[in-house]
Length: 398
Image (cartoon, rainbow, N blue to C red; front, side):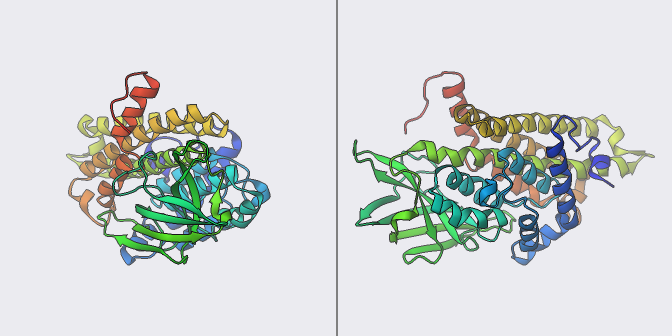
């Protein structure tokens, strides 16, 4: 049964430009060849979905947002959002898409030197070089004003010291883009800055954090003790501050929304198919409003979240960083809530079968909630909206 038959709607998205519909169709076809069974096996066996990642790279999907002159597809975050959403809808989302091409690739493409772009972007686009992203700290969370990881000059080099937590895929990534702080030469204040640190750099240590989330990408704590970096490890300006940081964080929020909506669509499709075929008292259980209405409501919520997600992507691609910041936070919030509801309702629709390995929904109960807390909690999103969208007084210090 096709996704269109199971879901009760069309995935062609006829209002989209033709090139977006074709991209969606092609990525969906690739993902269908692997599917949830492949992804679940990778999680169960403790391995990464390397075959899917490599094929997506060869087909140009991993770097669809990166400039053509550096091996990318010349598109934007909109196109990369389509890729991740369709992979997730087939049950095999690639979390490192959020990190490697979306955050790191975007930051380097916008702020890197010509040499940095030529060194890193072709590999990021092809998937042969991957980059993790480290911002969260044990005491600061993602508050860039409270980060304690600092960089200081030592001749032509930099010395980087600090700790990071919940960094995805460091063990597999060739390098990590680290958010630190340097002293502004004019004001003496510490400002955010970004450094690329190779995985084997002396003084760069990482330790796995045990997690209950079933995912092929593992989480790590990083410890950096006077890690010596060459001058060209710095991406962007030393004193550029939040501008270059949010060049990566806004795409991260949009891509998290894609991760969540894809997951929600996958769960809803499984539930709809079950509700159509599972018969009790000589009729499908989907004929009962107690089953049908919650599924219909989940469809509405997912579609609304998708609209905000693609609005955020369009604003970002148009260069409207301020507008994209507001929309990206809203999209992340809406998609996370919609995904959690869709997964929960899917499990309830299947009853006991919703908790079996055969149907593959139970593992999504925890996974869906990740989008509620990462990369920024829903409470902090509401703080942002209250302050920046509604003009209310700031409710926290930082």
